[in-house]
Length: 362
Image (tube, rainbow, N blue to C red; front, side, top):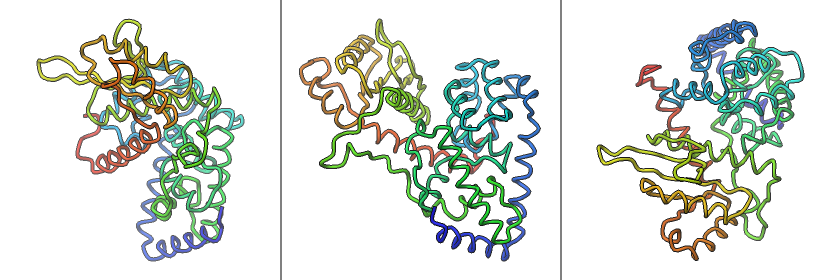
């Protein structure tokens, strides 16, 4: 971390406090109320929450702002994991006293549908002195401060890295205290990053070595390939939902064809239209193409898309030229562009939903 840059912005932040103390006092009040709310959910209370109480608990998170229909998202989390399993894992994550790196990895491994932003926000708002919030503004702010080793992908934010990021943010908190600011928890650090740094940093650099001229593509390990596959699959679902489709993952659209992600729309009384997305991070390209061919047996399937890195997309394109049924129908989408599209739409929805045009729970 570049302490010189940090101190320059901490000084500016402290000057703003002196000029407009009422605004900062409102922020402090808001932080205290947020922490008080989440700390009342003890481990015992979490373990006895009803589905509606889980909704109340999760729907107030900033990470949920991008979702207009929060019930859909939270109901899906409960459906995917089971209420008992989710409550037990959540209680252990938030309240157990063991190493946060181990608790983080266990929760992320065993619970589907809850990403790093939600996970870290729950930790921070419950224990604001110990844990930081990880999201796009945090990435931008910490990259501006020249913190090394920031994760590009969700799967890369392991418990070990999260613990390191908490340590880095505690350094920021110490500088806030050094500047005479009375509130310097990691939740206060999040407000500081939002106010002072988020517009200074750059968005995550998604492009890897594989897209740079003269370099060979990065080949993920088998375990990393699974994580990348699942992350891209789920981001495709999110994009579809934000665009107004009924989007689902791991769906059977025809006999013998289980598809990573589908977007489905009903057009008046004319029937439904389905768009199919297959993510390729490892394995046989022939298997991917066979799966796409089988999906075309469903007359509702109007579009098929292969999603992968540039090198594999070129291989898929060459294979598809020899298959008449695919050559004119198959589209290609670089998975890094999927991530950029997801980030762009998320920013749009965050901004629009903050206006409060649609009542919560509509």
